[in-house]
Image: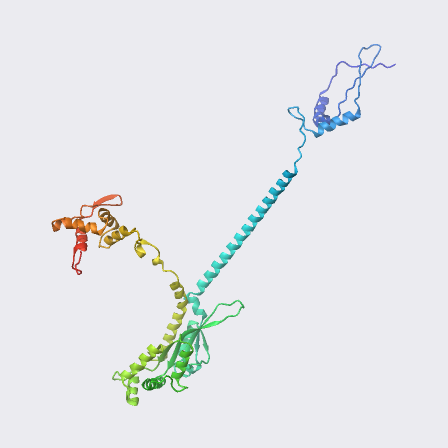
Length: 442
């Protein structure tokens, strides 16, 4: 029979010791989850009194202990974890209500941000359109929108090519088309695109009528006969009748008559006056009467020019003036910067309770030459009203005392003190006591 002997001491080599340490580190987790087994081994031998007892715990208890050790974390105080508290129905509804409120608040904030972004985009668009409209109203851009409309009858006159060459040189747009009023020059302005995408144009009020000397004399004779007979209309078909019809259709039209070939002879007498006197027996007074009638009653101006070069200069001047009109109208509608609500612009406002009279009194003294605001403030502080100053003057006996009444007043300005002085004091005295309106204060 074999005998088991147990060694009392164990000898461990260095290699086994290092292997043991490595395995110990790897098996730490496994050892924490392993079941606790108590064994007791009892071995008897005839020659040994050592006993070994092995006791094995049940499997069920071992598995439960493993689960409990792995699921529940160790507690520091050793107390068991409390049971989970169940929420009531009211608490659940309250939580849902709070969640719904937070969700609605987020939606409101998102909608507010989107609305603010949209408003910002619209404001930028409006500013961009306003800037573009303002830019289009500038004279250099308005010139590109103007078109000079010339009646074909004018091109039959000698020298009319000067006008066409000038328009081509300036790169201005012009159009040759028949008009109801012959020998006329008009202007049209392109309008911005409408909602339907169509472009329109606006006809300007200015109408220029170019006549030679013969045509103008016929008009003068017809007008003179009409004024003498007190008739309202002349025969149809004449230039005067066409002009009057044009004015009747649109009273806002401004007609300008350009009379060419207005020359003088060697004696300095105008060709028109000589012709009217020799052929029709009309005096200068009759001619002036016709011109006054055209100017006052029909708003027709008459300009006598030497030739087509001057006609071209007049057309260019009118074209440039029309290009500046929109921008001038825009600036005239705007408030003037020097009419703001300020003390220097509109003076001092006096209320019904009398507040503001002191400032008016100070401004009145300050109007004198070389009287600064500091000096005026010193005078008005010593004498708060003109009546008090006049009473102070009357209380003095001599003229010299009255002139030097304000000379000793202290004036504080810029951290320094000085006196009003006798010069300013004498001028203030003369201003408020003199009876001569032609008196020079200085």
